[in-house]
Image (cartoon, rainbow, N blue to C red; front, side):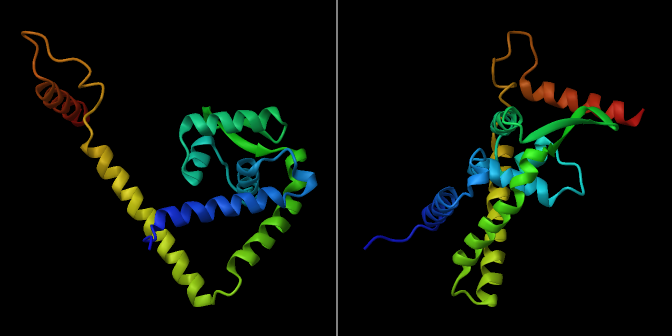
Length: 186
C-alpha cells in the first residue's frame, strides 16, 4: 500500500481547488485566469493599503519575474494600473481598474461557494486545527529556505578564484566587514 506523502496530497488539493474554480468561473470573469482572480481578490480585500509588486510576491510565494510577468499581463488586459506614490518615486502601487472591480462580487460568490464545499463536514475545531497546521508548515518551510540560503556561498564571491597576490575571498569579506563597521561608527 502506498504511503501518503503530505506534500503530494496538498499539491493535489491545490490543483483540485484551482480546477474547480476554473470550471465554475463566472462568465463575467472569463479574462481573469485563476492566478489573476486570486490577485484581483487580494487587491479588493486590501483597498485600504498600498499594495506593491513585492507584496504580491510575498503573499503568493512567487518570484519577482513571475510577479512581473503576471502583473504586466493583467495591466495589458486592463485589470490593474500601476500608480506612482508620493513617498518613493521607484515604487508603483497596484490598483484595480473599473473592469476588474466589475467582477469582484462574482468572484466573491464563486470563492465562497468553493470554500463552503471544501469545508463541508469539518467541525469548527477541525478547521481551526487545520489552519494552525498549515500556518506551522509554511513557517517551517520559510525557516528551511532561510537556513538553505544562509548555507549557500555567495555566488558572486565564488565566481572566480583569487589571483596570485590577491587576498582570499574570506579575507576580503573580513576587510569589507571592518570597512562597514568603520562607516557605521562615523
